[in-house]
Image (tube, rainbow, N blue to C red; front, side, top):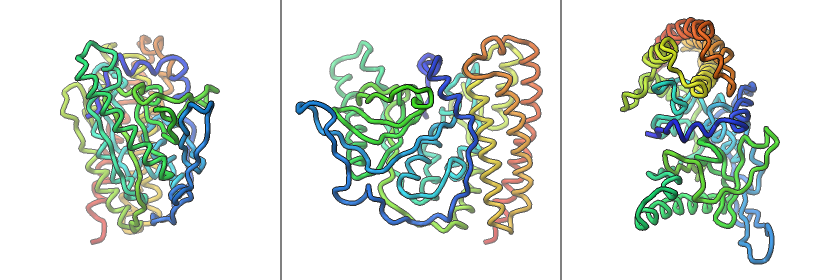
Length: 389
């Protein structure tokens, strides 16, 4: 489980936090039927761009040959994955990725509203969404974070840590050389970005930085901000999945995500998440950045759930009625969680979280979101069970 410590995650503050605030922008665009696309230019032999980036002593840079777009979102795994898939010829958007992966149906909060909640779960649960949209998934998952290289450790231990990070880098380099971008964890802050190239033992990435008019300097392979260890998600091959089958599996997977619970008592998921959140605000123990970050992430997730199920209902008449009920309920949950997000603007929410009136209003909104989420879950479960065999 990718549990992130509060101290490391609070590096989101300052300008990085402002950049993530841009993620509230609307997303849209209907997806086309999932099918195996023709190989993109980047997947053909010898099509990778090789450029000199300086003097003759520097190694050649490798970069993917296509433009790769990173559209900001609070759930950065979703936006990074969507960016990679679009670059590889898949017609999809963030709504599709959030829905098919099940991220849209998750809610998980940490003790004290730690900012780790939205990423403190088994990321392997998200992989069905990649296949559903038309690519295979290859994951490298490390056990050590880059910060361990700066701690008092034995030289043998540090060597193992560097070997692990080097292995992640080598995988990315191989994918880049084949013309395929990758999802990369820990790009500047503990969030997901897109690796679009490699040079001089460093990653070339696409992230949120341009949205605050900052450069995206190369990140040395051992300097990522990845408190839970190395993570690379690659998309080696095209696959073909019938859209109706993908939709049916997405509903079943959504039910799995609704019932997800971490193994740590520090976290609460599903209906328990609301109880933990309400209790935290009621006791005035919510960490300001974490409280605001969670609110924006989960409000976005519920908007993704609403929009994804609307699409599934429109193309699957047999389950349109219960899905329509789920859409209404998720819309209500999204509105309520959106109110919480507006009450605690990110990243400037310290005064608000100490305001009794703001906390009371947020608790009222959470008490409205909780049963709406339960109604949505019941309707979604009904739809999954009613799918024609």
